[in-house]
Amino acid sequence: MTDYSRFLSPTGRQLHESAIRRMGTVVARTTDLVSFAAGYPDPASFPWDDVREIANELLSGRDGSVLQYGPTRGYTPLLETILGVLEARGIRTTLENVAITSGSQQGLDLISRVLISPGDVVLVELPAYTGAISAFKNMQAQLVGVTQDIDGINLEDLDAVCDRERRAGKRVNLLYLVPNFQNPTGALLSLEKRVRLLEWAERRDVLIVEDDPYGALYFDDAASEPETRPMRADDRHGRVIYLSTFSKTLAPGFRVGWMVAPAALAERFETAKQSVDLMTGSLDQRIIHEAVVRGVLPRLAPGLRELYRGKRDVMEAALRRELGDRLSWPVARGGFFLWVKLPEGADDNTVLARALEQRLVFVIGSAFYVDGTGHDRIRLSFSAPPPERIEEGVRRLAGILKPVSV
Image: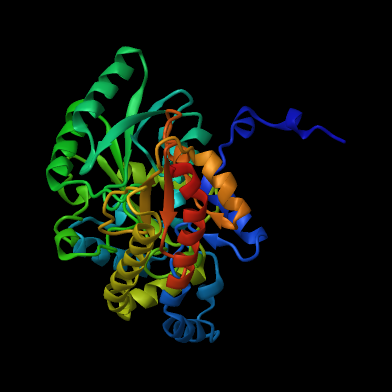
């Protein structure tokens, strides 16, 4: 048998697989499995009737460009519509700063290609989103973690870590953050810290990658639009590259996200995208555009918040009923996840192995840490399963953890 490893490039040898996508493979192969792994939206929330009506109109054949190649930067009417979405979030910008991506994950990949050289230090939260970890590691970055507080990244540790790495001769140009209902912790970065981070980035000459997939999915008035205001909205010095997506609010299958960046960088990201996929799918962009301009998105938003708040409540109630005070987690004020601390002495890999035997899957906490820690945590996603499956999954988890907790 041919050993194909000898054909691999240095990058090919070091490609970093997403732990979440790996769990998706387990889900696809296992029957009667309860998945708390991937942060998938609930399919019941998809605007099926609206999409069907829009698609029927677009596929009438009257406009050949619907199925044609299009600009790499994106379908212009959609870009203009996104300007309105951004303005509603407090971000005022122009078309030269915005580009459509094939999901916000592609934005992370493009940022990695354009801004990271092998050996560069990228600062990330402890813990951090695994998709970002994969994108940065695949460009051979050195990821260095910064501790988090209940209200987001610890600014004193951030400054100390940046100073330490630079004194060691490292190039430190990027900080990656998920300010709104962070994946995996659910933390909401405080407004005070958002302001101070902008000041820090200017003083330290660093770019901030602000990833915002969950900002619209808040569960209470105290975590509504004022508290989820993007840092990009108050960025006066071009320090923030802002990523967002329609995946969590309309549907992920369309693979339509966007990035906002200083014009000089947006141009470089567009050039990099040309060699990756030429363009995001024309039909997908048209459907998303029509859904936004017809008011589907604002009509859906309140129901989505109610849906996911209800699922969070079901999972929390089930965990308390089945496991009492054996587990703890910070309050999830939005998003898709509970960040659960395991009982004393429990290890995430061991618990996952036992969970798989009981047809239950989640993501191990250590997958989100770049420093080898996090084995005392697991991430439970409540977004996709119906309530009865959430309860069944928690019962299976309790059966696994109760012996460990004695």
